Length: 367
Image (cartoon, rainbow, N blue to C red; front, side, top):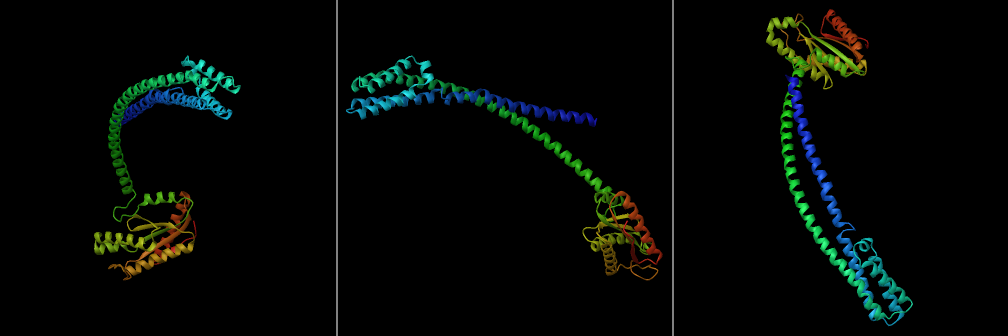
């Protein structure tokens, strides 16, 4: 059932993703296929704007040449008019004008002929100015035609843009609706996933935690050793001396309080770097970075000193003392094999302390 639901959910998500993607691609293709070419045609050199500008500028230079020829009284003034005529010829000599307008070729030929006649002084400036009305008329006709074409292009562009905006609006609404639906489904799935992950993490935390003291258990100890693979670590095992007598004298609730108090004491004495574990009953363990044996000795001494300062009363202690501890330690380079040897060494050291009368600590050589 769960597998079938997972496949169905994946199909829904995939369908929404594909639909949104297809809608977006339709918008992109429509934009590239219809709108961009129309804009390019509107502003290109072969369209109305640039063509009209060339014709207008060419007509301006022809009319300037006419004005200069009408008042020309010296060769220098004729040369100036001749220069204006050359500029007009360069702007007028465009392929699109030659192809679309029949008056272009004769006008250009006339301008070329007039330029040669002016150079050889075979035509009067007034006559040349009069003859230039033919190119002016041709350029004016081109301008008017370009304006008509421009109006047509603007109308067509406006109509196609309006259609494009309508399609763009509808598709945008559709994609927004699909995206909103996808987002809602995603949020629902995300919440379910977060809840499942939180429950899983909480379950794993409970599985690795001692419920009485709140510190790690034996499974957490093995997991942390694996996490410190290759590091120099110290392992400290701790037993409460005569804990059974303490329970018999004060009851198990007080014994539980002592166990929780010892967990807090271990954390205070060994510092934040120490990872603490309750292995069962009154047996505790601590795992902490330990570069040398002197550091391990320091931690054992700090733990015993902290217990002495705490002065935990033990009414049934055979030696009439407060609560005392038996402590065994070993240093090792963390991995699965060395940890087993280190644990055995620390346990032997703890046993030696117990056989020697308890209330003490001992460490063994590095494992």
